[in-house]
Length: 210
Image (cartoon, rainbow, N blue to C red; front, side, top):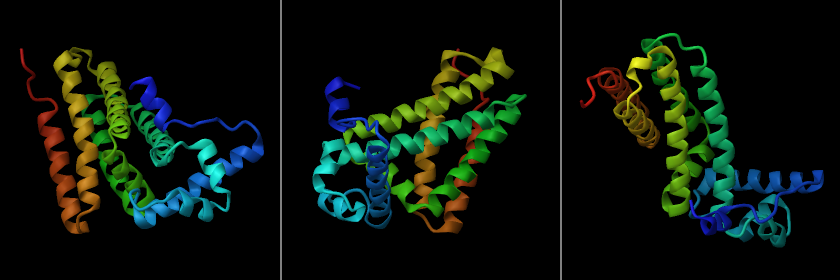
């Protein structure tokens, strides 16, 4: 991502004092609540300042624009997911076990999004902005790397460039399938996810190109 893009969606300043950290947390908590109710596109900076009970200047002190708020929320959520997945894959002992863990992550991703509308709103918000979309893609790559590292550990013979590409593709499509499921009726959503699990199990170990 270009430096200019990072400036645009990054924090203007990083709080150091406890009071400033608390103010930033208030702004992000209020943003998450608004996004859960209305979505990213409907959120206004003035409305956010009122909800967070801070001056509008305090919002702009940290965030140059709305996309920077979405990035801050996305970063927190993505880090939580990456940590949880890394912990889950740390103990895998076979490729089959890795596939079990991977398909299990689909269920808890879906359940988390169903329970917290802010998660879904933030994720959807990343798809409306080019720089934020890059964050989403980079997140998919990190998840793919975790899975690829686990496979490399238990089955080093599978560590090929084609397998790396397949893992990256599956990781990105996993996120897309979950987002589709969350906006679908629950019984259909479960069938969508079950179908994707079958695809993963049958396609992941199919022969790669020579």
